[in-house]
Image (cartoon, rainbow, N blue to C red; front, side, top):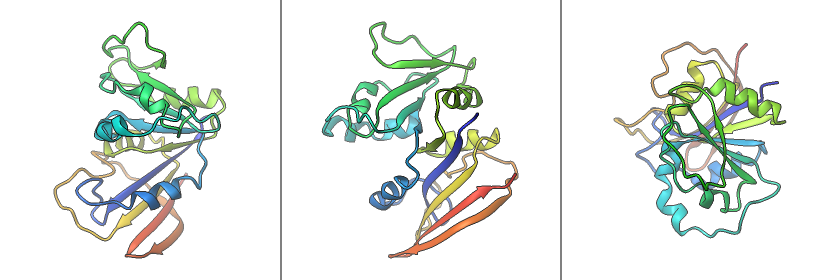
Length: 203
């Protein structure tokens, strides 16, 4: 059975994912509420954090942690070993397509190759379900979330809305142009003016 897919995002009032200082401590504290089996992340998100990962402590994999699954069709992320050792995740699964450039033959990172020129996200979720995953939390920017929305693969949205208007910046739903009916599940407001909206995708 395909796992439940939750997209948890920190955004501005106008839906931007960058260009403002997000409350990262609150964002990740809230993320622990779901105790996901898999953290699904896109390459762009990890590339933006490369410098921080480079100097972060590396206590090693956390046996009880979730699996980190990285969507990287173009093989742009080259620090997966370091990510595995940060102490948040139990292991790393690299998600590639058939046209992904060749990887190092001595890599110790487990791989899943699916799709021709892009990772087949539906097939990935089916695979994760067969491996026993019940909940997948998407921790990524608009490109991955938009692709999941386009394919009808998102079951729940968690939006931590910050009191700022950014203007010209990437939006959390990227180029998604479809229609999505939502059912409000929860609303909370935190100081200083941050609002948490949680929606279930209808149907």
